[in-house]
Image (spheres, rainbow, N blue to C red):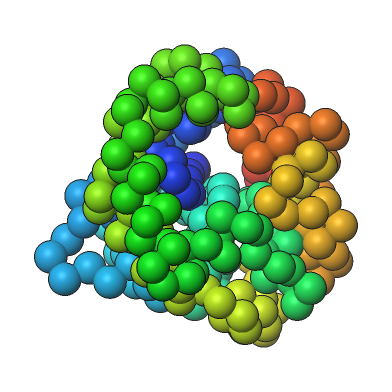
Length: 255
């Protein structure tokens, strides 16, 4: 059973390092961490960084894994990677056995974008913001990520990924996700051929409230993994607890 992980913004696949190690300790080693274009992976010529483009990209990656015999696939998403995972589950559920994701509250009708997202969505202000991000010395970015709860090694890898290409993808992605885009995604997912799913609920995530996440449990018929007191980077702050929850979910699918 292949486990595929998709991260978000402004991240690289390094964000999964501690969780992958914890899963390896529990006997889960068939793991693939995919980096979306612009977020730790090169940007193809003509790339528009729209949510639909990332779903198409992810579908292609999963088909390639299946062609190599790496199936069935259990898909895991975080942050904007959650958006890509939910988009894939809505458009191409046949490609996966299950999905697990944090930030499920993104598709709730009451969700409101955080302040940084609103800045990225504003012409002029967004360009200035991402230019400043790309120009920030890597040592300072590393220090910032460490202050947010990431280990120095992971923080340094993520800081190296912040560049002008990532900045352009941030703007395209967020500007295509103004309301009602994510509400529409939630409706498509609700109507899709459902797959077993797990809502990962980091209760202290400042970007998506736990209340909206819990609403997704009932809406999508999901199991619920509550990570009490954990924030946005739960995979780094509580890798063992998260690994236990994921393994229990996957084992339940095999029962």
